[in-house]
Length: 167
Length: 172
Figure 1: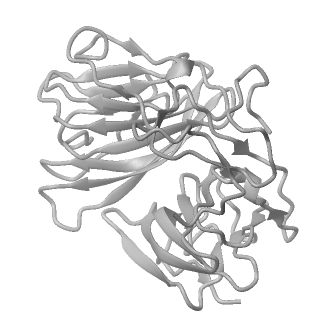
Figure 2: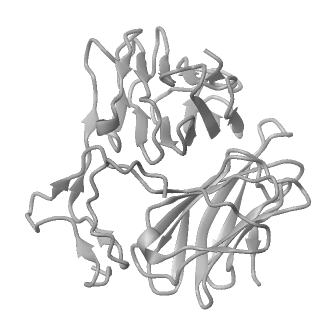
Figure 3: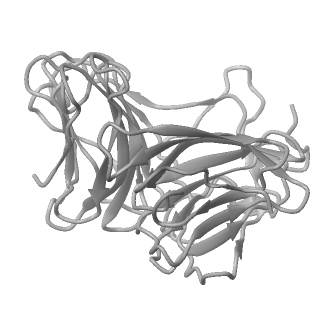
C-alpha cells in the first residue's frame, strides 16, 4: 500500500470492502489562460479536467504521490496558433502511450510512447500533435516521481507526431 | 467546483484527499424488460458510477439522466446485437448532447482503425451500434461523464466487424 497514511479512508476496514453508489466526480472547467498554468492539487485527485478553449490552456500536475489521478478531456479544438499542455511538477516524469487518431486520414492510427525518464508532459497543437475535440487521457501517479498515462486518445490532423515534451 | 451542493460528500474536504479501499461498483445488467431490445432503461442520478452491461443479442437501449456535472457511467457490450442495436441516448435530445470521440476498429479489417467525433451539438445525441460497421461488438467499452448541465463527454473503444467502420453518433 503506497498511499500515505494521512489520507482519509472511506471504508471501515471490513474485508468485504465498500460500495459507492451514485458517486459523482469533480469536474474542473476553469477559465484557462494561454501560458498561465492552472496548478492542480492533491485534494483534486480524481477530477475530470476540461480543456475547452480554442485559445489553449495549461495544467500543471501536483507532485507525484502514488494513487493520485486526473483525467483530461478536450471539448473544443485548440486553434493551431495555440496549444493544450499538461506538465509534471519538477522532478516528475510520464510513462505510457497515447493512441493517435486522425480526422483527415481514414483508417489511420499511430501510437506514441512516453518513456518515463525524459518526458515531462504533453502538448497538443490543434493538428499534428492532437488537441482536437474528443481527445482525452488519464494520468495516474504510481510513485513519488512517475505518472502513468493510460486511456490516451490523441485527436489530430495531418501527419500524427509525438505530443510529449522534454522541457 | 461544479458538483451540486445537495449531494452528500464522502470526504471531509481535508486537503490531503481520501482513499476508498475495497470499493465495489454497482452493475446494471438487465436481462429483460427495460434496457433490452427497444425498451428504454432510464438511468438515474443515484446510479452514477455504475457499470452498464449491454448483453442481449436483441440489442439494448439506455437513456442517460439529465446531466449534472460529475455524473458518470461506464458501458460495456458483452454480446453483439444481431437485431435492433445497442444504443445510448441523452434524456432530452434538444438540450443535452454528446461531446468527445470514440476509436472504432473492425475485427475483419486489419489496420482499419478510425476515430469518430461527437461535436457537442444536436448532431450527437446518441450512439447507436449495430453489431457490425457502427460497432457494438463484444468488448466495446464507453464512458459517459457529465461535464455540464448540457453535455456528456464520451470516450471509448468501439469494436466493429464486417467492413470499414462508420460513424456511430446520431442526431436522434
